Image (cartoon, rainbow, N blue to C red; front, side, top):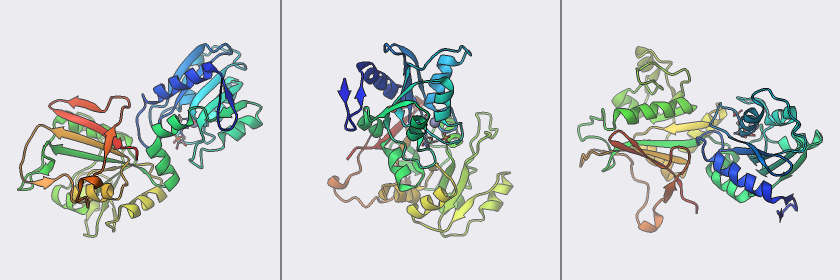
Length: 356
Ligand code: AOF
Ligand code: ZN
């Protein structure tokens, strides 16, 4: 048995189950919600079911694993069983019901989780379950669980959205040719993938320059061009007055929100106030660089087209880096689809800031 800092005791079966839960969690999709995995084991340590959370709006890990075990409607006595989960069970009605209630309804007698949920509306699950007579222990593999979602923990604790920056560029890091032409640098497969991403985020931000140059729709669309049911809030940042409402009405869209600032932190504060949990930055060069230079990007997605332009618009403006020691280091993010994917002729790289 292993004893953690809070002097909780964990069985070997619980340790193995937590490792399994961590691996299951990594099958999820990064974004506004953390990666979370859960395993139910019976009294002798046999694994009864494994589940995980698949991204904002989908069932939480606890609901997923309980559904897998009891989904057929079969009643069974789980009072001696344990649910092992990588995050404190939530205690709020969000996009889905509270996991505390799902655990109580399933009749599970024991809960082991890795780390406390720092998200105030969701927190308090452990206390709630204890009050209901459930045996609750925490802290098992807390470091690994925290690490897996370290960017999410930072965003939640700082009270800002989780930020994805998306770059669609040539191998020589151009997003437009010298004459400004930019359609299309990446493949149709990459563009379709971007639409899928748009359908998952709460908001997209671009600079006024991008609106003035391209007047993009910035909607999430299916392969046949029809708009997806979930559309992100479209945000344009910058001082130049953009009649974004008119531009979008002309294209049949709901319009843009303009934020009159160049400061990424101000944009994040305002969007947090508006309930945005996941923001995607879609450039151009100034906006991309501003968020990256400020250290406010949690995930970097790069679509790399096998194309050279030589000159042209760079994907990024100056990051204020003058010597190699100041370089920003990023590392592969090994979740669901893996850190590198082929999309037709293009490569898609998914990166997270390297641990410091
Ligand atoms: C859990 N299990 O698998 C996840 C949790 O918008 P919602 O309803 O999906 O709630 C999101 C919040 O719930 C998220 O910020 C975090 O605090 C918690 N996520 N909790 O018990 C899960 N994904
Ligand atoms: Zn939950």
